[in-house]
Image (cartoon, rainbow, N blue to C red; front, side, top):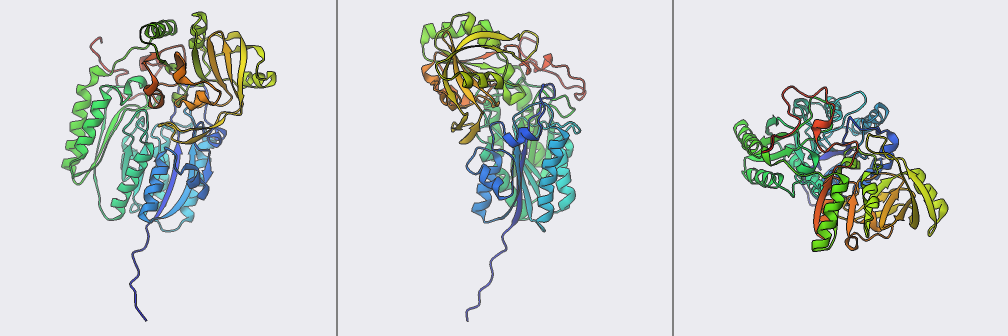
Length: 505
């Protein structure tokens, strides 16, 4: 009888994801129902169902899953949970998800490693830093020798304790985040190296100013050059991973702000890489600037561009971005379009469950008078108008553009309404308008529309920039000020400036 030598045992790795970006100034908190819905991401699921939910979707956990399967790891699936950005995660939601994740890790028995898909800017009702608590609880459970690696959002607000408790953290390098799954793959690859016995020195830098969200875009300068430089620095064989996090500038916590993470074969290499990236970042400070137009000015500029060059002008309704804590219900830009008698314009996605139900009750082809209440913020009064119900939908469709990457959207009862020459995408559930399918599902073709207004800050660029003659940023009244100096901070760390110093300031 032939004798065979057994091959090496497959690595046993726990995998999970718990994602939320918290605007501590926003109006609506994220309870369990927000995670059960997903807000544009796969809904809350556990065990094997969590792996099925994320497979093939543009999220970090999907990239880690693909790498793990190719590597032949034995996976212990825990949980997937994500919700649309909002105010604080409720204590109930956080503790429920965290306890379910920890319970599955505890039941798994001995593990060789853990890979997590986290955000980096989660604030809860009872914790300043949700990710710190998640990783600390996992570390306490598995001990000091099991490597823990996490993928993070580019907007993570990172502090010393998270860096200390995790063996490695890697962040997205694109905004729009078209590399979320790729970042999960990089995180899993790093875990593989750690499980093989490598250990990395760490270097961490917090940077001294907040950056307005629209000017963090990596398709624009200076971020485009900074991230290209990051990749060049990482080509050094001594560098295992290097990340630049722009931070999410609407979190009133001491950790708020940009940061740099470096992992390398030795302290000197890690420090040198972090220092080189910090030097480049500080030198680029005056370039973090842009123009945000009032609604009337944005509409006028868009019409002038169309008159000169034609095509499609895309306008970002940045201060009501659901991806930054907005509720997608402000009416300032809609009002400006209607009052200017604009022809061939569209705006979406505006969320009003009662209005959507009224449209469905009336039926396609009906004319109805609706009052959209707006956000209640100063400068955002209700909007009343007579609308034609053009198209109705159950709100279920696939968003297959570069950002959502095949996510199944569930926006609830939805409609396309028309008032004059303006069409409105109305939904019952919020998700950032970052995909052309979020207009197409109710019959609106963005590339055949003169002015397309999106409730988004940057992510829309991934799918809309290819059709845009020009992109404008509009600062209609809303809950996410484009300028962090307009937020009433009380708890930021000493010395952190609320905006970059530009040539004008």
